[in-house]
Amino acid sequence: MPYTAEVLYALHARHLRELWPLAVPLFLLTLAVLVPVMRGATRYGRPVATVVAVVLAAGWLWTGMVFHFHYFATINFAAPAYAGLFVLQAALLLWQGVARRRPTMAFRGDGAGWTGVALLIYGVVGYPLVDYLAAAEGLRLVGLAPGPTTAFTLGLLLQATGRIPLHLLLVPVAWCVVAGASGLPLGIPADVLLLPAALATVVAAPWHNRRIAFPAGRR
Image (cartoon, rainbow, N blue to C red; front, side, top):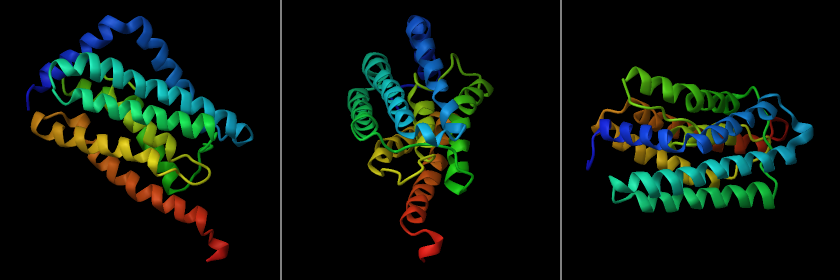
């Protein structure tokens, strides 16, 4: 690897330190979209889908253009390519959520829903906590850093009340694999945990879609 875990942690700390006046509102806005989704607000399904898509897209644009392209590129030659993938994910979220106003999202107490809750908790609380326990410099927060933003996005998509658009999972799952594989030699446990997150998603999402396509009463 062209850098160490300490260098990566320091880069995240610098990123937050220099841009916190813009970063903090985005972080709080990202957390705010959890309220209608976890309350199961299906009556506002399509407006919520649009809001969630816009907020998630903002987080993916930030992590792509601000973190990857401006900061991470100083230590990793592949960062501009990562930035392109994150911008692509933002565009897909906007197209699906704003133009098509789907998927609608509301917590469900099934396997996919609880898997999504676990990923949401990991993205919001688990990531910075694991980094803290690893004595990391700085915090990696949802909406601002790639890892927690990815986990959070997967968690929300697993709350879809209808079919989960599988194309929205491609970039987040790919990033889980890239970050997890990089975290192994670097000794970054928070990133390594993205590997089981990817596995859980690729199992839960098709299972959920199959349940939607073939309800129990029609089997």
